[in-house]
Length: 117
Length: 111
Image 1: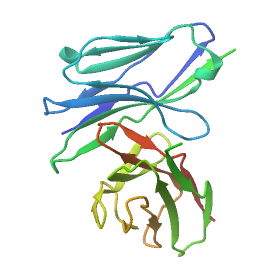
Image 2: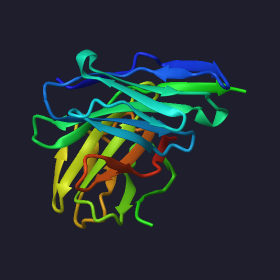
Image 3: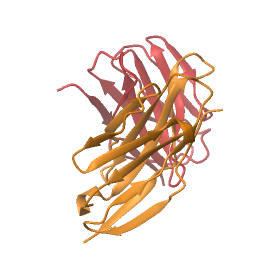
């Protein structure tokens, strides 16, 4: 069965600290996609990154970086030099060909990040 | 700009009342989805539609109904059969690529 686990419910850091959000997934498919979304207090889900199962290259985008490791079924997200504006709930999601034959998202329960000034 | 519009942003429902949440997209996406978000539970799929005039139940469809008469529109009705409807509802659409585009959500409260 498909599953996404974000074990960290809430993390608090002081501004300028680095922080890593963990995501572990389960799927039987060989082709799948992994995503990270940010949900600020306004509620809308903001897309951050997408990775497919055949691309294990890590990625850096400004202060954000992602570490995808198929061997451990993990897709962790690091924010370097955190800022107060990074405060939000972050969701990891998996999309694979479910038993219905269509790609659907499975979301983790989210990690609430609080960056303190 | 293309996107998804959900309305209203806030909605209050009395006990035993049906309410309808609107979701409109101008992205020309075939697939549309409704998710429910409760604190600490992430997002759960209510209904989805891959094409006009067709839709399927998600993981928590009981107490909800949908229609897909137009490609652009996928309204969700929360019926009186839904015993605990207070939640944040998110609509999404998907085109050719695997990612979703989300609306800004509707917060429903039972009063």
